[in-house]
Length: 215
Ligand SMILES: Cc1cc2nc3c(=O)[nH]c(=O)nc-3n(C[C@H](O)[C@H](O)[C@H](O)COP(=O)(O)O)c2cc1C
Image (tube, rainbow, N blue to C red; front, side, top):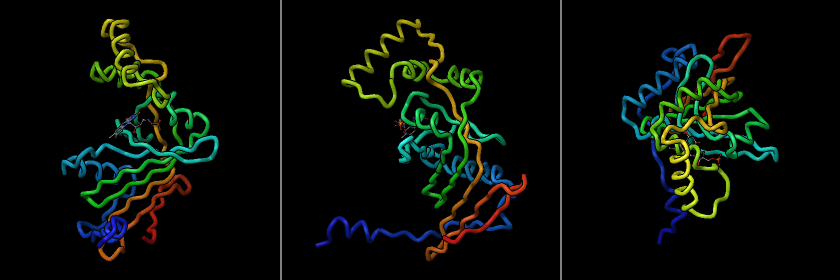
């Protein structure tokens, strides 16, 4: 009989969809990212905007969670959360962080490392007020990452804040955006026989240097 763990060990996939090379890739990593994100969106992948955020606590232990990208430009990658959450507290103590996108159907990964900073209050306000009402109330209702007595706490908090703000909630002071300022990018394209393509971009004298890494 096959044990569950050997069944897992024998799961294998050959990556043969595409290639990534020095000639066809963009010189600027932001352009390469925009290109791949667009292909993930156009390909109607499930949640193409989902990315993993890694932070490191004051105990030097890393932790990860999934969030949604909400914007990007030459300054970096923007996402939103509760500043008092575990990740928020970890970023307050150590702004070095990493992001990862895994677009399974495209056999692609993007890794981005850099420094996280809060976006301006005006930028957070603008995005907060573009969100649906239940999400805006939810930002008040959930003491993210804290232990709560039960689900009823969230439901009661949501009802309380909806009434308090007469369905016009302002942005909570503990809620807003972060922008990762990239210092290093890696684009990974799965290839046959585990000979994957990996292009890393790093800053060198104010320019982006593109290097191939062994898979
Ligand atoms: C697809 C997906 C998208 C998510 N997007 C966000 C997000 O944009 N912001 C956020 O704070 N949490 C988001 N979450 C929840 C986080 O993964 C996580 O549970 C939460 O932020 C608490 O993390 P922390 O306790 O490590 O701070 C998302 C989860 C999933 C599965």
